[in-house]
Structures are given as C-alpha cells and as structure tokens.
Length: 155
Image (cartoon, rainbow, N blue to C red; front, side):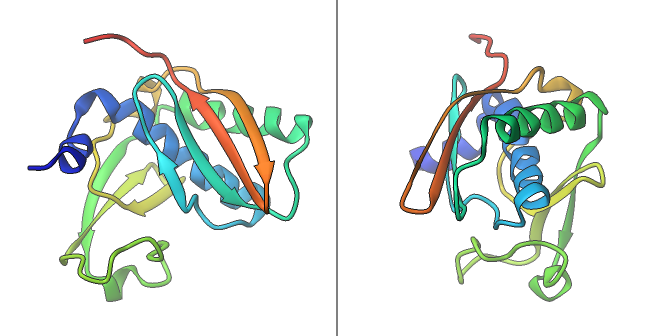
C-alpha cells in the first residue's frame, strides 16, 4: 500500500475526515456551490477549496462554523452503503470519482445530512468529532480556501 492509500485508512484522521464531509454539505446547502474540488485532510488542521463568486462575509463564516457544529452535536450515525454508479447518479456527487473507480461504490452517510462516495475512515457517530473551528480563510481567483480544525489528540 502506498502512502496515499495508507492515509485513507488512518483511523486518526476519522474525526477530521468526517468533519470535512459535514463542511462540504454545509457549503453546498448555504452557497449552492459544488463540494470542495481540492481537499487536504490532516490530523491537526485541514483545508478545502470552494468555487465561489465572492468570499463569504465574516458573518457567513461564523454561520458555517455554527451549522457544522450543530450537525456534529446531533450525534448522527455515520454509516456505509454500497451502490453502483448508476444507482448513485443523481443521489450523490460523482464528479470527483476517477473514471476507473471500481464498483460497487462505497458511500459514506452522515445521518441523512450527507452522502458521499468515499474510501476513507470516519467516526461512527458525528458527536465523536468534537468542536469544529475555522482557523483562517483566503480568497483568490474565485476560490475560497478555508482552513479548519477539530480537537486533536496525539496517539
């Protein structure tokens, strides 16, 4: 297994990775934008890039953080299902899937809030994530980059 594949199975990334799913769905719901096209998930801090006409205001950034934390606090079950690309079409965003992806697709569900094809590790319940905070953001050339954290413990 290569380093990239190892990262997808690293249990220490589960809280951050699940938070990224919730953030993506929150951005889709608030701004009508696609899920992040460029995501970098790490244990201490992560970042996502969103295509937006203009950067979110300070009030909108605070609302993103609040909405993500509201979802986390619902203690939603995080479950996995499997489906073909055809079954998934129209139900989940398939735009980031490589053409050679094997079927069936592994779909991660965060309660009824989000569903996304994903091979990574996740928590079993959104409440395990802890408090989500946006640490910084920047905007250039139609891309809003947001950097965020969840509680980190060294293991």
